[in-house]
Length: 450
Image 1 (cartoon, rainbow, N blue to C red):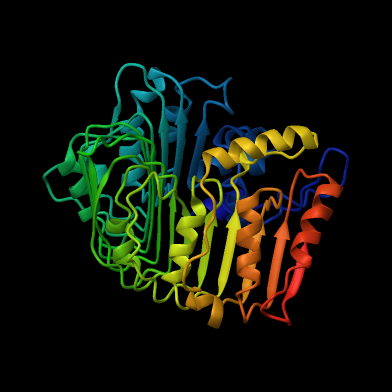
Image 2: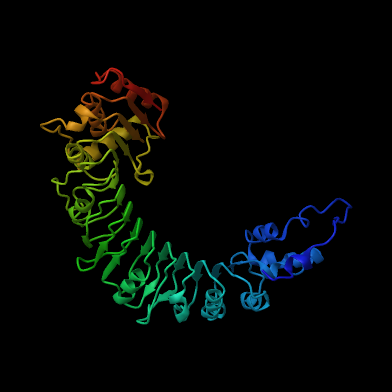
């Protein structure tokens, strides 16, 4: 902060035009700057007309928050003029959402300025019809950067020269363009203290996406592309606590063991050998969420989850109940089981009984029946304590059979909770009667039906 800043802006008690005290203007400078940091930069500059107290205050705000969506009346030169007009103090945060090539061409200059003024957090979301935005060279050696978000028309070309984001802890990459696979490896290897990595991909030129970050604790990958059996991920993150993948099809995986992993989510993946994903985490994961069909993935039934205590499984996939039985057999310490139907695939029971009968017949023809396993899963006999089913449809034969199977075999169950949505009261009552008249293995189980 400028040495004469506080003295120059301090003054005697001020009054508003109606004569009442102006309490906001009498707040300390540091608190006013904090307040200004929470609003868009266009509004920050506009405060200079409020009074003499505010005339120069905006020049010291350590944050630039600009979006063409919110500031459509501003010139495309606004950001440039703001940077050259502010005082030579810290600019710790920069958020740029630009929507024209005129603005995009200046982005490297703006980022270079921010890096030279102690940048700690950067969010870059540019739009450019001509070409992707290239980051300035000094950006790849920014030692103060802690949080980085890059989206869409950003070209990531990590140089061979020394690169180090030694302070970076959170990295979010959404549909960015990498020069090549080496740029991917160099980017992650230059982050020795990275803890959280979120990636969204669709179709790009990187065939083998390598993530080797010893410090990483949270990894989320949403990939909506088809790997065609030749694309893949190589993941080596021994400190990982949380791992989530979603949406990919026909990808190969090479994952090192994850001894620290506690929670994993595998959602909507197809034509993938899930053993290569599940085996490295099987011995450590405690919470597991799956939305898979055993017919759409190459699932191996020999994976044992020795530490798993919480399992969440989608009931929207074909033959999901077969996957459930395998998981129950291979999760000897499971305590909580949650089943849930995805809302987008929910069969709404707002039709007549005649219409439902036709729907039921079609479903029974397309889906095989549920068959009880030869041996009761050990977790049902020894440790399952809570059973929850969201969007339960007791009019569906397989769902009713599975619910009754668990209730009649879970000897230590303390709570069973069923919730139905978009069903008539009469239908709910019928489902409740069916479940209520079945004997339960645990006499102390609290039965809840919503």
